[in-house]
Amino acid sequence: MDMKQQWFVDCDWLGKGFRRFRCEAESPVVTAIFAIRPQIGKYLIDAEVRKLARCQFPGYIYDIRTTNPAESINVALRTPREFPVIPLLDSIREMMTRWFFKRRTLSSKNSKPLTIAVEKKIDRRIEKGKTFKAFPVRDHRFLVQGDTFDCSIDTCSCGKFDLMKISCRHAIKAGFSVGIKPHTLTDDMYTTASWRSTYEESINPISVPEDAWKVPSHVEKSKILPPESRRAAGWRKKRRYETTEDKIRSSQGTQGSTVRKCSRCGIEGHNRRTCDRAI
Image (tube, rainbow, N blue to C red; front, side):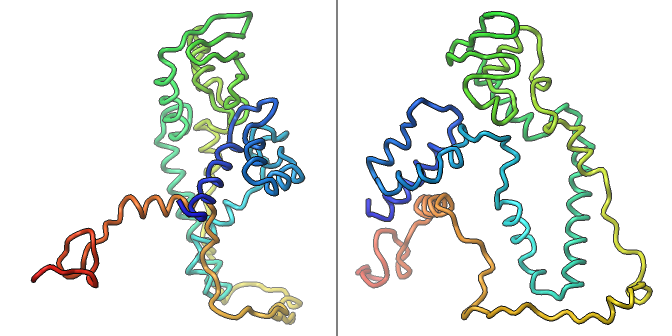
């Protein structure tokens, strides 16, 4: 394994460590990072681990502002971004109208109390927790054996329930033991009712033709100049920068699926330059 591959493996392992749900007294991830790369370990400590580790973040998980929405919109508008302003706005409106209608139709057909993705997740957790046993400790508190975790009705020491607000397999088993259904323990944001209310409004096209628009005089007289910025040399970048996880995923997919063959004889194990087979 060369240095580049080792760096990808280290970064992948680092990402998995910081995505853990449980917090130990001394994080083995940070300790191991100091052993492998002391300068990176110092940087992480200076940047505060609670900003990097999911289990130590003090706020609510959905209050974390990430670049994912901006990246998704950039990909969807890769072609329309080349348009002038008015056609660009029309493209955004058409795209949002299409998205809202599709999701509104999908949510109206869902008859289960939770969204489709969360229902599938809970079904998988029910299957994984079939062999668990829940023993009551006191009112609304249980010890779940199989995976030994201490669960209350609204929290669990595994950490997933507290952070994701979706019933973990331990809380599901504890709830079943007292006749509580899993969807009642899940946060309201995952319910079908919340899903429908999000897309209940329609995004309508502008019914007035452009010639009939009433534009204020001061707007018509205003001159809008392009920003004073110097365009960098070369082609503009239209795709986002790949993260370490993207590079690892693409390299693993390439190694597992690509089979190199000789373009002369079609046999694996060599190329056209070294081919010595008679044709």
